[in-house]
Length: 234
Length: 234
Image (cartoon, rainbow over all chains, first blue to last red; front, side):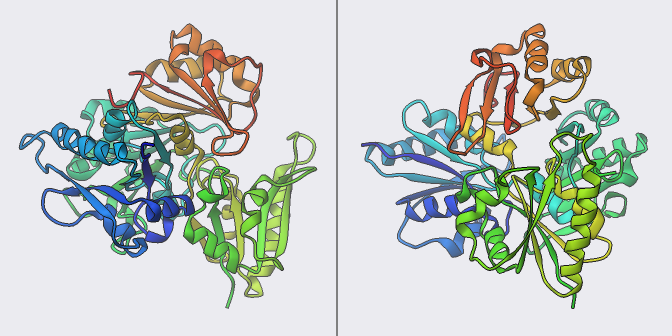
């Protein structure tokens, strides 16, 4: 009997936004795997820290901060090998995924390496997308609205084209692309409708109109939401 | 002291996909409110039935099946009045929302009527969007992918334009628009990449390639996912 790899969505940050299912599988697994920066603590592990029963084996995927420094592919290759060893020995492995595993999540790189050889089950979680809307008190989309999720990493002219046509948009991965996004929204006359959320549902959460944000860059866990009608229900 | 209206995302269908926070607020509220068809049982109530402590007042929003028969606006107006009465009397009200309250959810119509007069807190839930991806074992989007959520209710030429340009797409509200969506995908040469999910995470869940679906219409709780690269991680 081989073990199962569980990709657990643990939610956007508030430890209470984990599902009963993810909590059950998290506590039952003899082995945990989670991403962490090259140095320092893992946010994913911190989110579930109070739920851990203790005594679990932990596999830490140390992700390179600078892509060029060493390839992330190697980190996933090594982790997949280590996880595969546990699965082959019949031990379940719970991979912790901030938000949802399949919404721009790095879990898919483990999934792609493991799913052909071992059983994998993905447990969906509360994504940053709906968490940001909830803390803003602003519906994402209603009725026949098209909702576009746009990575801020795209080129300026691509962003402009997407935002010009968007009814409702969530701009993700803002980080060091904040200035570019703000410029595009200003040129399109949409800046006043854009709202900024940083670290939604976490203790350090910040929410403000994008035009009031006095910063050149944003943390990784930030998002800009915008609706052409102002509010989705109008 | 007035009460608080809680908009609780209770997840896509599996009762275990409720969050700890929604469960706590659900069980503590003296009053529940939830949508139901004109006749018959409420799916939202069924999802949480095993979690209910008993003895709660229940407000059922009976939604018209045929829009023309009686206006949904009146249902929301009346419910908002009844809910407002409880809140004014200091009683918290938990509104049950399938999936997430602000992802195409009808909760926003209550929110729009209540939020100016009483405190409202929205608790995000696992949306059908990420639940469908999880049960398919297919990531929604990765890296710089633009993810477009498209209601199947749109006109054929609008659908065609959106899908022609989409990298990753989730087509929601399929229902009686199935044939139209299938036709558009076929014309665009994208049918073979589209996957169909019905009632994700529920007991009656069905998953199949869209080309293999032998039906003229689909239930309300169905979605079509598509990724131009086949798999998001490639």
